[in-house]
Length: 183
Ligand code: HEM
Image (tube, rainbow, N blue to C red; front, side, top):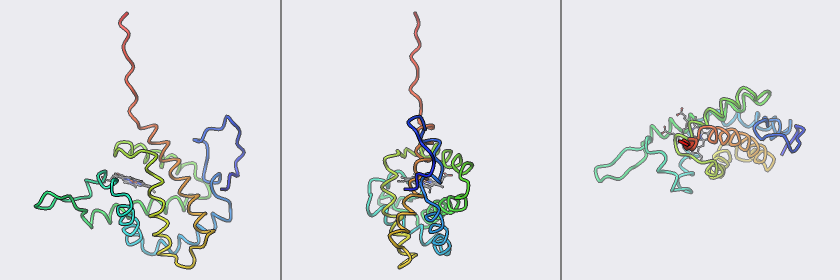
């Protein structure tokens, strides 16, 4: 991990930007490989989400809005909606790549997206489940170019993204109501 920023025990996770997670050479690797991945976002995204739901069946229930109900009452994914959603998530990855030089503004956008995920009932501990599926999707697109170094660079970018999303979930989580003291 990059860990380029100076940290001390008072540094909050919230202040960590993308250059804390990736070294300059990892940033370069991510940029170069994104140019290939970006050639087909819908197919890569669909591959990633198909893998996610194969591996983590329990997560399906969070995505009811992307499903239709069959006559027998079974919920199945609507491929068009799932592909649209997968493309949206891929575009978010692309924005992270576009903001590698200075992530301050983008970090706030990710935190706001995290707040939305709190409403979707996503918990921070679920985010690591998506990484193996993203890794598979990248491998499918990049082939031999998905080296050990490339995998680590992408993992570090994902760590940055989920740290900001998780911050947003914490921020968006309903606060326990304070008890009124009548006396
Ligand atoms: C295990 C990990 C994750 C889960 C379970 C999850 C779950 C969800 C759910 C349930 C929705 C709402 C879908 C709908 O009803 O339309 C959603 C939306 C979305 N997610 Fe995630 N998500 C995860 C990770 C991520 C990551 C890592 C990113 C970014 C790279 C991301 C980006 C988005 C975007 C852009 C939307 C659409 C937001 C909107 O409504 O405007 N998600 N996610």
